[in-house]
Length: 240
Image (tube, rainbow, N blue to C red; front, side, top):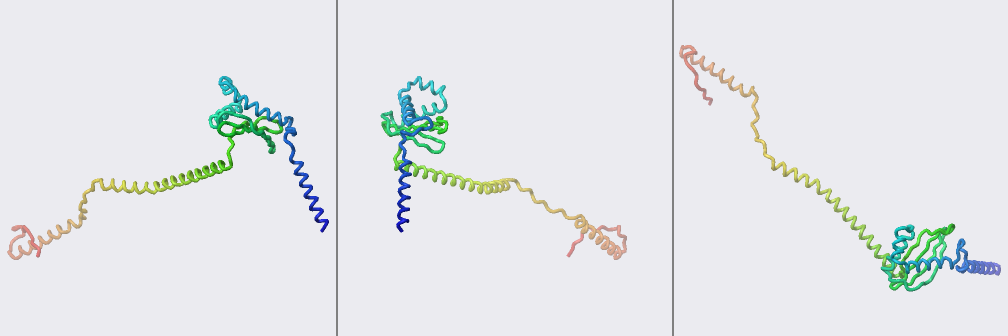
């Protein structure tokens, strides 16, 4: 039991020692050839240059400067228009994450604090980007995130409503086409219905029967009268 307690205590002291060693003073660390003060001076010097830059110098850098410089000047102008003029320097912080090193200088502006951040590639200490961002409270960040979520949901539902309307329109098109075809059919003139022609045999059969009947009647009359068939003419025959 005593050995277990001793081992647990030793492990606790070891963890505390490692934690104490990991909390190194950032001002004493060598950042690949640059000191804490070098990086801080670079950030603060950039801010002072931007604050006191004349319109002539700004135009020159915007026309002939690198992409990083042009983006920095535009971001600074937008930040000043939103947060107000520069007042004083705040905290300075260096963070190393993998192959990236960031040096962030907090700036006190008239309306809201903001942070100017240098982003370096650690192994070469080349500047990847220089950003300018406003400092927002946790409540403001949560409100912004909530508004973005609501806007995203509204956009999704709006797109779904539009898709449903398009599908309904596709169902209406065939109905409109059928209605148009029916209207065109009712507007076109109808061809007169002609009597079906009777077969030639049906038309000639009564005539042939009448001729035979006339000949028989004529022969009977001629025999009864004692005359020739050519002496009289049968004009009509009435059927009963």
